[in-house]
Length: 435
Image 1 (cartoon, one colour):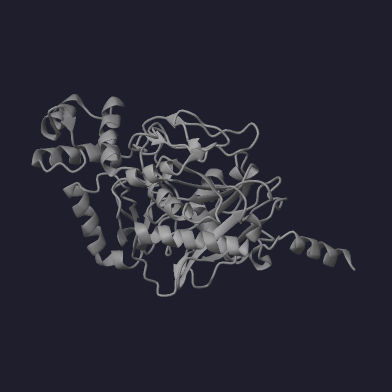
Image 2 (cartoon, rainbow, N blue to C red):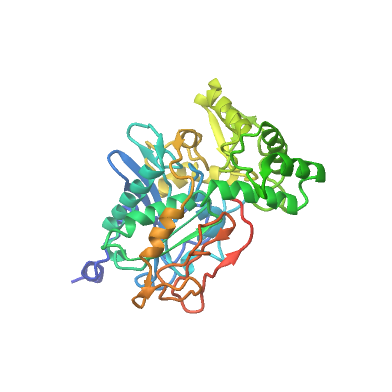
């Protein structure tokens, strides 16, 4: 028996069943191909729905390392942003051609599954090309995609499973976890939400205080906001019906979100043009993701509705997150060589960091995640007892900052991956939830 055949039989005997036609054997842009395996293809997320995934095995001991699912937010933004610009093993360079290895890649300690969700985002698509969806449907579709991944990669079905995401992932992850925790075949160990949207109301209110205490709002504007938006010691900057409050909130929003400040990093420059403005690039109208803040303010709502009604908005519109330059990842992922290497379907559209179509047709079902988090906390046990909210240990099923209280927009929830010397701990700080 030849060595190649013997090796193949051994792999089958061990249950190593990764689909060979999904393996990325050569990735353009790298000076040296990786020593770890990675795969790209499609997962079935329901009838006629196909979610693109990019899976990277852990750089050491993938068989026993955790399996971590990652979702970017939006709604409607691609997880390839997380892969190529945040914590993936390869980082896109400004030339849009070259990749460099990431010193801080998450796959140094875990197997990471990046999924572009929902259908219509990035390279994901549906047969009918209709991309209206909602929180509830997306949660179920993501669950079906995860199950399909484990059908294709059964060798990871018993690994510790963690669900992670950022921004609108604050909705995606807890709602997905509700499905996963009901499935005894899945070994859910924890969830992690970074800078996540957990409550629209708290997020809006905290942003105004953030702006004032960082010196962005003048004394007169702050005084007016206190006068018109606050009563009996409590302020409502979220959905206040007072006309004067609405007008002053318009001034606040213009300063914080539409003047060129970087909403993600206040002291850093704002790439990609001033948020709130529009520009043309060739045949495309470029607008900015309106984010998840102040969605109930009349001025913000009317701007969104007017944009959606514009004739050009029905065709070539590209929506970029504020202060984000998507040129390099767009150039790279839309290269014919890269699409071929990643096994991208000819049915998939041109890759964009965020889908205008998905975002404008998305129905937000949940205004806060209290119920989901409390349900998840209710199932959390450690040694047969409810998990102590004040501790983090490798045996904890998961940890939520301010576990006993409603989740807030200024809490960042982390889990601990059981890897020696590596701990993801709780941090606090006023964070803004964006796509």
